[in-house]
Image 1 (cartoon, rainbow, N blue to C red):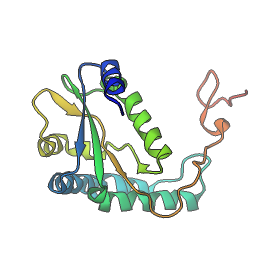
Image 2 (spheres, rainbow, N blue to C red):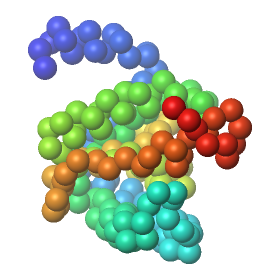
Image 3 (cartoon, helix red, strand yellow):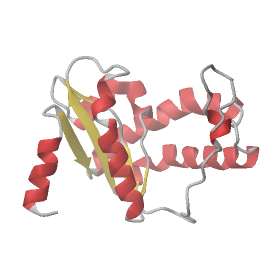
Image 4 (cartoon, rainbow, N blue to C red):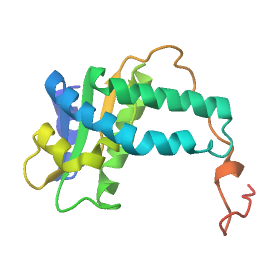
Length: 178
């Protein structure tokens, strides 16, 4: 990216946003162990006992679960992590609203370049330990972790669930009609 475009992109970002690019193996192993612990203790048991989302077959659900399990065990092996951070008080449901559109754009660019990437916040189950391992200064908080690497296996088009399975009209549970 040329210097002028980089400067323009930086000016478009809020003054409180920062992005940490992690390549350090030790940092990835430390935070990756926290991610795996959160997966093993909290998420895997709930998902394993759960049912597929509306419109998802049991087979696809189990494949997704296997992929998430693999990520938990191997997240530290992704060549690069991007950790979006914001300056400010305690993170809340709305405080990340200014950073997630930028994260979505990063995910779209990674996909366009043939890279595998995902947004995860699971490591934040151990937020203080993770942010200490990331070396964040006081007053800054991480809002996600994007492991980026080369996908294994088939990396084809993304499947979409039918709108009628996930969108309601006017009232919860009332079918959407387009």
